[in-house]
Amino acid sequence: MASMLEEKDAIHETLAEYCFSFDGGEFDKWVDLFTEDGTFDAGRLGVHRGKAALRAFLQNIPLTNGLPMMKHCVMNEVITVNGNEATAKSYIVVVRAKGEGVLVNGLAGRYEDHLVKEGDRWRFKTRKVHFDLLGDMR
Image (cartoon, rainbow, N blue to C red; front, side, top):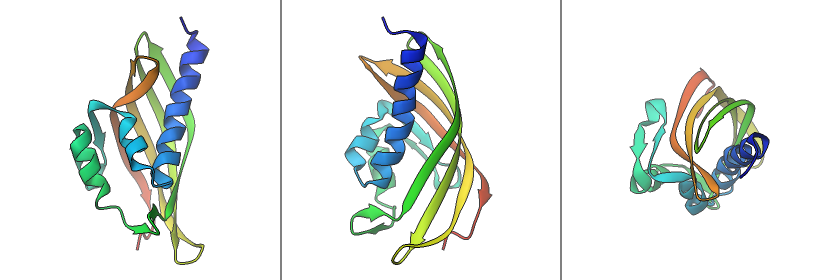
């Protein structure tokens, strides 16, 4: 049985994989981070339940050379583990590019997560994003 620190470390990996898989255009990996009935509550961008809805959400992401021109930076994670379930809250900063490496305004906010352990993997049951600070996202 894994220790509490090992479980928290595995959850940190899930939070990081979310960013790397989305930003790297590895959308199948991103969807696989959610349970079959997992929910992504993207605020003004809608609530997406289940893997089919998550894949549909991805169809609206603007891509350049197959990649979203953004980077998600997650920090200040606070994780509570209770058996095979966990909650996490963290800050998020997203920076966006326009054209060849020109950074434009992004956003800052918070994630609220409910995760469950399936086998040896932690997955999102629900992930809610709160957009606290919005820049000019054009």
